[in-house]
Length: 455
Image (cartoon, rainbow, N blue to C red; front, side, top):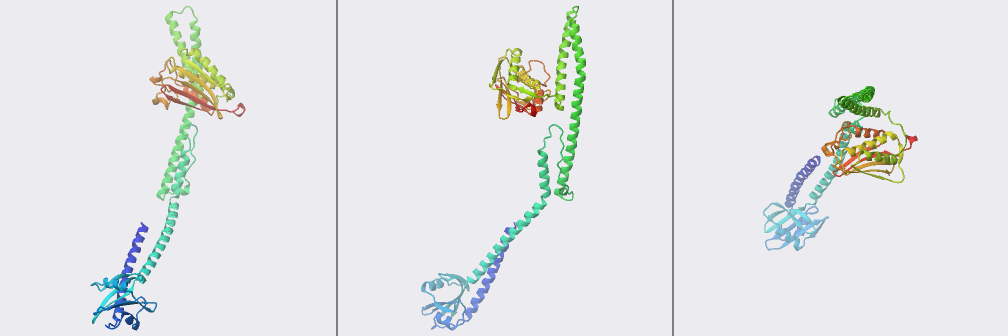
């Protein structure tokens, strides 16, 4: 906008100045015409020679008898015009007092006509001075305008950079906070907008101050959430631990009572039901206690683990439990060993195989494979069953998560199997995930290949 305004000012100034210069030139042409002494016997060259005319002055005369002559002053010397130049001038003669003609090799001239007795004269002065002056003015304006715009751009850039400094500080702080994982664990947000960039007396400073206030609230909320989670884990661990004793007593007394041969069939059925439910409750309590201990990081016992042998044993145990399924083992000859808790990793494999057995129909092919990929050991459990419902795929590893009818549960369960598997894998610094489409479902566990001494 500034450039457009400056261009308009420059063009307007040049137009006004050009008009003033042309009016001055017309005045000079009229003054030169007053010095011309018309004589039917004198040629244009003689008139210019005898008079006092400046450089560039042009004169054409035509007598009543038809004689035509023309000349101009060039660097103090009077030179004769040729016939074509004289013809161009005469053809341009009109009714106006002053007008402009263009002559070959001489350029543009501002001319005027004057008439005497039996003589018509045309006198003119060159426009070179006007065009030269306007060219210098325009060149000067272009240079000054360009320089001014560059200087103005630099000043504006510096001013904007200084003015937006607090906003950049806000953006940098928000970017650093966005990289902090807040979904779990003890999270503390220490990033804040610097105090000198959070001045509430300016609009941008108010944004920084507002962000700092927001981060204070979020940090306090995360601290409260972590405290509540720790209290909940402690409660679950304590409650699970306390429930083990009465559940053990219930199971023991029910087993003891079932040995009494004098029991009636109704009482025996009731005691068997009590025993079954106590076993189910014990499994749930054990799972909850395990999760609580895993959350506290106090459950794993590291040793050298042969992941290949672990998979072979898990498949061998799964075959009797799921005779209606086809169990396929795909492992390399070279074992995959890593540092970990063998019992807990075996629990991961058992949970994945039980999940495949429970949620797929009879005849499903379940393939268990172990391989080495770079610095990771990979345990995969693949089945060609109906697949995981996309509606529950995102929360499949959450606690107490249940599958839908496409993978209907054939037996009762706590809904903690996959969440326990994820917790155990995470405690080993590994990952567990699932890829599922109808007829192609794969649970994949990736564990770092490290030695027991480095664990």
